[in-house]
Image (cartoon, rainbow, N blue to C red; front, top):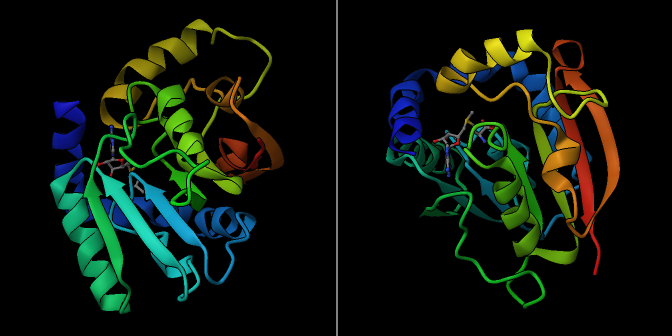
Length: 206
Ligand SMILES: C[S@@+](CC[C@H](N)C(=O)[O-])C[C@H]1O[C@@H](n2cnc3c(N)ncnc32)[C@H](O)[C@@H]1O
């Protein structure tokens, strides 16, 4: 965990440039979440806040990240956009918010480019689903492996060693991260790099 926090502190000044090729994909992912004009939106692992510009201005926004530098960038972006955002330094695998059955649940939770970064992607998505209101929408946008095989081949396993250290785990499957959760898949679109990156939207059911 300290390594992840440290490397994202290093990436923070360049992050917008690194994430630029995924701009159109991000727009599609947020559009797919169909955020309502007054929704309460949670951005998990918000980074520099690139999602913020696509969230309707009347929404209440809460954002979390582990990196203090990323939270600082998000704060500056919010100020520049004239938006109020409640920021929390939190581990995505252990959100402290109450469960979504309670009043405070979120209408929409964005889990963008973080489920393949954290050590336990299933715990991250499980927490996002927990804090979502019943009937709310979870947006999952990331690099996901497709295919029926539970175990990736040798080449993917080898490439994954440096990928996990510096970038993201390239061998996670969205199906594995959401298995057993009270989520109904609404949409699953390939959004970038020939389908390496996908945007999925789910509705939470009771
Ligand atoms: C690839 S960036 C994605 C940022 C943003 N969600 C986006 O779509 O551009 C991953 C972010 O997750 C944060 N992060 C990594 N591990 C985390 C954890 N365990 N809990 C919370 N945030 C974490 C990093 O600091 C970084 O801001």
